[in-house]
Length: 410
Ligand SMILES: *Cc1c(COP(=O)(O)O)cnc(C)c1O
Image (tube, rainbow, N blue to C red; front, side):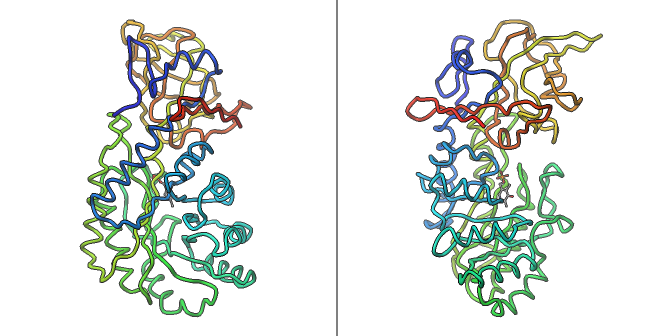
């Protein structure tokens, strides 16, 4: 079910009229639906259960997709964990009520301060450091020793697979900076006991984002499960990362969820592990993309030879995916005017040619002051916004399950 629909030519999101909201709040803004987010989480969880991947599984929401505090609190209340990639995200997860024993910390550049913070946030520290190099492991061991702690650690495998996605968001190939190669992990296994302040609890992978073809996923899953067979002791968990793509063109919220889970289950099954480690997931995009829209207003239109421009008040500083990755997002009017559709360059006010939401897009002929919506922007939207051109970051509005609006401005 989509949370976006027209009623008498007016666009509603989660049963609220977007025009009405835009009367009260300045554009551009992000608009989220708590219900839409929770329904994605529940669908994910239900599918994990259908494929019998373990009652004790843990779904760690990747904060970088959308660290909105209200949405995080809501997810954590349902029992979600957190995948974090910086001290800031770790702090946010804790502030929003995430149990430290449900937090994993990934990333190639963890600093000493971040490691200290993660170790100190609970008796046991966080649930797992997902370690991306031997050098990092050495540092975690040193810091843990100084703090008289045992650091719980999972090793991130670089599975040498080439995930089919945009090259900027593919992360599992042998030349990518992420993870440790199999041969190096095998060697590490033989001397893991020399790390006296490290407890090896798992293995992890994350091969890329916006994945819709799961051949590489299955291969990576099989690789990591087979590697688990060589671990010096049975592992507590295997973390299969995030990456499940969303249907930006068709907008089916549960697009490929079954297929993805099926590939995972097959990979796990084929590895023939003699025991069942706990299964962890780190979905970001899949949970939050369809739970948000970006609302922007046409400032003016401009005809330049044969090219028709609609210049809107949102720019690449507010929402960068279309500029950075040439990503496709559906763009629809807030009021269906009945005007004929024309090919339109939908561009922002920023002084860069790449500041564009769509090129040659067929949409009703737009006029000044009309509102449009960029769909599926609940992931990697506000979290990637900036103040480029000295613009203010857009506000975030969340429609709660109690039909309130929570405003977040920063
Ligand atoms: C970005 C990231 C994720 C989330 O990826 P999605 O494509 O949003 O699901 C998960 N794990 C790690 C380590 C990441 O860097």
